[in-house]
Length: 213
Image (tube, rainbow, N blue to C red; front, side, top):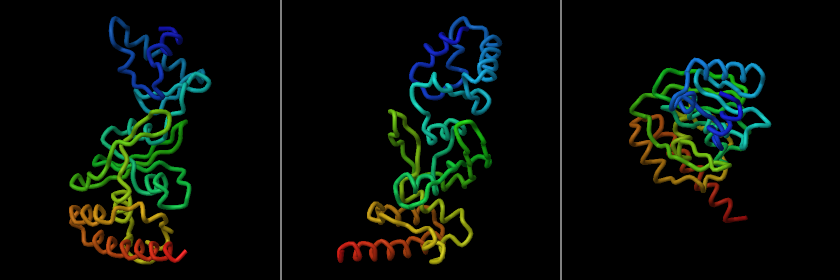
């Protein structure tokens, strides 16, 4: 396989898996040798075994970190600080893309960034949606409400007023408080229900402050 053939097969895909290249009468060993060679010469980034991205200047669009995260661990969704920052609910830039999975936790350092996958119980694996990102890319990301509940659930003392104030939550009008309460009830975790009550108070106080302005 020539590199020009690879570019034609990959097309506009910002990241691709080896299986995409193995259709038809193609020698798998030759493909893997070429992928290894192109990685060594800097034409490709290997993100994990079987998962690659084109390196500049060959990529037509920058792979979005959320899309990369979904592909690094298939049964996962972006959540916690990463999703909250995406929705504008916290002010900080989050350098690590945080996802949740019902599988074992894992940490990936790649040429496209750092990715952390935290374990969550299977019965709490809900509350995410497929959203559109830049460059016509898509990824599974927690809803704003579930991203906040996931963070609280995973953080020791996450339901305390001190921790919630430390988050410096903002733009709380973007939260659906009914959805927040419903998801907290579905999780059946007293910690999340306590936190939901506090967040509701914060959201109403922020709304009253906004009206006064």
